[in-house]
Length: 49
Picture 1 (cartoon, rainbow, N blue to C red):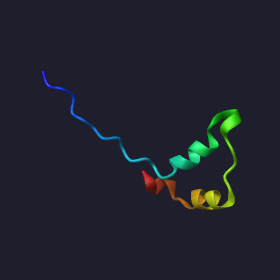
Picture 2: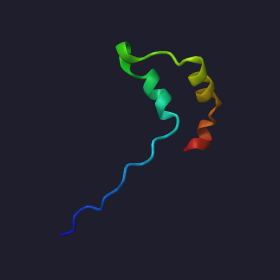
Picture 3: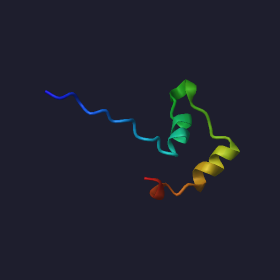
Picture 4: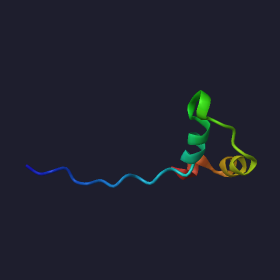
């Protein structure tokens, strides 16, 4: 019987940090600041996958 092969975690998607900021629930979420919003909206999400 062989043991499962180690699979390193996939690299995080570049847009994930913005989703984390916006989606932390009622008490933890916040708006993006101007620089974060500019960076996020400047990403071509269809090309990041």
